[in-house]
Structures are given as structure tokens and as C-alpha cells.
Image 1 (spheres, helix red, strand yellow):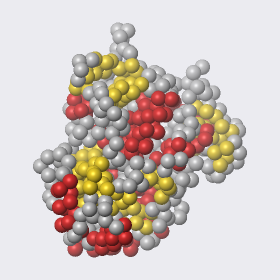
Image 2 (image 1 turned 135 degrees about the vertical axis):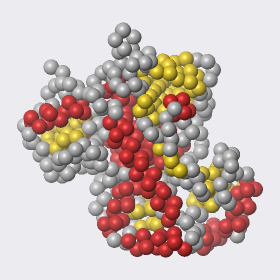
Image 3 (image 1 turned 90 degrees about the horizontal axis):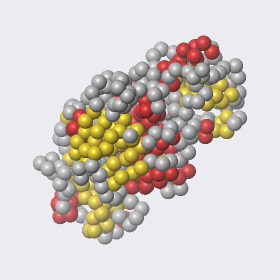
Image 4 (image 1 turned 120 degrees about the horizontal axis):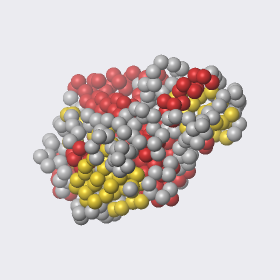
Amino acid sequence: MIDVIVVGCGPTGLMLACELRLHGVRVVVLDRLTEPSQESRGRGLHARSVEIMDQRGLLDRFLAVSDRFRVGGFFGGIHKPWPDGVDTAHPYGLSTLQPVTERLLTERARELGAEIRRGREVVGLSQDDGHEHGGDDGDDGTGERAGVCVELADGTRLRARYLVGCDGGRSTVRGLLGVGFPGEPARVETLLGDLETTADPATVDAVVAEVRRTQPRFGVIPNGDGTHRIIVPADGVAEDRTAPPTLEEFRRRLREVAGTDFGVRAPRRLSRFGDATRQAERYRVGRVLLAGDAAHVHPPTGGQGLNLGIQDAFNLGWKLAAAVRGRAPDGLLDSYHSERHPVGARVLENTRAQITLLGTDPGATALRGLLAELMDFEEVNRYVTEMITAVGVRYDFGEGHHLLGRRLRDMELERGRLYGLMHAGRGLLLDRTGRLSVAGWADRVDHVVDPGGELDVPAVLLRPDGHVAWAGEDQADLLGRLPRWFGAPVH
């Protein structure tokens, strides 16, 4: 039996496959497309996703094909300098087109042994009964492992212990589960195209600068391959938003908004997107889970969508692997929903706010001006920057040390860099005292005794995703916390 079927070969599904393979989980990734899409919906990685790639030893691959950028705030069309004091050793983002991100993650997933099957469309699924609210050990009591049966469009049937839908905003998996997807429909629409332009670059820059004074949802950005990404407000909301705009429709709207169509031609991609915000009511139904756009959709303002999906996968992977291996403590897999659903809801909220700021009415213009002034204060700029980049995410682990629930930034240790010790995806006890022990969990948690570094507490226990699960120096207290995240000890 397959351990986990991942439906969707985008950044979320590929990141999840990599995480599961680190723990020896047999993964099959299914995608309905026969070839990787060349559409670049996401254009880069924010600081938290940069950290994630570093934690798994992938950052050098991304740095080799990406340019760094440092924009603070980046909120509602308001750009400010990168603020001081952002809690990261990676104070930058990476301009990486989505097809490049997918290529790098595909290469890594295959290196780790993940099986990727393209041209495989899921049309049906069913779960074995009796395990909708638990049963992470995978046994139904009769010797037959509980699981998920998947039907493909070609009539093939597959069986797995778990399935994760990473198949986008129009998720088939979510629909088959019957999970509610409440939210708000699109009220405004934007046309997006990757096209060649024949206009003089200086003319393009001048027109963009003038139009953006009153229309912040307009922009022309070089793609680096001879084409430009052009973003222009649509005239209303299309009845069928799945139908891309025609080249003539795109040219007409450019002339209406900018007074010129820049001589656009040879489109690589034409699409439309709205400001709909929706979120799945549940991220888990028994042995089926949702991640990425299958769990939440929102406007692309702030460039958060691709990053949010990668971070979903980073949270879920080690938990699902523990469930497959029979090591998951009670509630661990459910903590995926309890931790990530609020994060997704927060992103929906801030994108709603940004769409309001991008309006052209006098109220929106005044509000944008006021917020731009407030973001000149370093503390406000830092708050907004940490929100957009997800550096400020803190999970609710209850009362305790101020680090509890936060991810720990990279730091130099006597034994090297902290993130360099996390490539295998295991837990880590960073111990400055040399008096602590993880005996009984050594197969899941590395114990690193290092008195150096910048850590201002005696010791911290990090989950595989780098979030602080415990801080202190009391061995009994540590022993009380280890089972919550890593299951029972082995004697």
C-alpha cells in the first residue's frame, strides 16, 4: 500500500513530498497535467520560505537562480525600506518564478525517492470507516489497514493510508470530501499577462509612473526573459472567470487605463484573477487533508499565496510522517488544522485590507496615504513586514517562555549554523548546559550540546519545522514536553 498520495504537483505538493520522504514515507504525487505548467502565478519566496529552504539544505539551489530583494511592508502597494530588527538571519526575499521553484522542488523530491505520476486526474475517493476522528495507527482492528481509495479518470484505482489534496483553489479533493469553502466572491477583477512589448522602455516607465499615481492596481514588471508581466484592472467581473482574456481585450483595457497598449504581442500567458477570499472549514477529514490553495484562496496582494502553501506543507509533513510510522501522539495530526487554519485566516484578512487600500475612491486614497505615513515608523514597518513574510507567525502552545510557539531564526553555533543541523527534518534539542537528555527519543530528536551561539536561554527543543516546543533547563519539564510532539519514548 502507498503510504501517502499527494494530489497536485505544485510547490505545496512537491514540498510535502520532500518532507515525507525525509522520514522514509512512500509518496506518490498525482497531477492531471501531463507536463509542468509554465504559468508563473507566484514570483518569489518571502523570508520565512527562504528560511525553510535553508533548514532543508535547499537554499543554495535557489540562490543560484534567483535575485534577492529587500522591500519592507510591501502592503497594499506601499513599499518601504526593509526595517531594522526583523527577527531573521535571512532579511530578504528571492525573485524566483514559480516554474523554477517547481523544477527545483521536483528535482529534490525525486532525489529523495518520491514517485511523480503526471497525466493522472483524480475523479473519486472514499475512506475506510471508523477512522474519521482518529486511528492514526492505521489498523482497523481486523488486520486490514484503514486507508483511502482513489479513482482516476482512466479507471485506475489506488489505495493509500493517507491522501493530501494540494490541487489548487478549484480542488477536486475538497469537492469530493464535501468540505465547505465559505468566504466572499470576487468584487473586482484584474487582468494579468506575460507578453512582449514593442514600446520604448523609457516610455513604458514614464506611463507606469503616471498611471500608478491614481491606479495602484496597474503595473509593468520585466520578467527577465524579454517579456513583461502586465497587470491592469479589468472592466467588471467576468461571468466565466476560468476563460482567459483575449489579446484584443487586454489591449483594449490597456488603452482605456494607460492610454496606450505598449504594442503588446506574443502573449505567453493571459489570465484574470479576482479578489475572492475563501477558506476550507476543515483542513482534515479522517485520512484526507487539504493544503495550499485547496485550503484557502485570496488575492495575490503581498505575494503570499505560494509561500503560505509551502509553509502549510512544512507544518504538515513531519506530523503526517509520524502518523504513518505509528509514532504520532494523540492530537498531533489535528494540530495541523489548529495551527495553520488561523494563519490562513490571517492572510485572508490582510489581503482583504490590501484590496481596500488599492481602491481608487477618495476614501481608499486617503487611507493609503495615512498608512504610508504610519509605516514610516520603524515599529509599524517591522510589524507589517513580519506579517507579510510570515516571520511573525507564532503557534499557540499555551503559557510559557516568550519563545514558545515561535520559529527560531538561524544562528551561528560552535558546531556551525543552526539550520545546517536541521536538514534531516528531525527534532532538535539545542542544549547550552550539557546536562539534559533526550534518551528514549534519540531516533526522532537530535541532541546538540553547544555552549556558544546567540541563544539567550539554557536550552530549546525545536520541532522539525523549527518552532520552539520548549525552553528552559529542567530535565523533568523537558520529559513532560517531549511526548506531546514526538510520541512515546523507546526503552
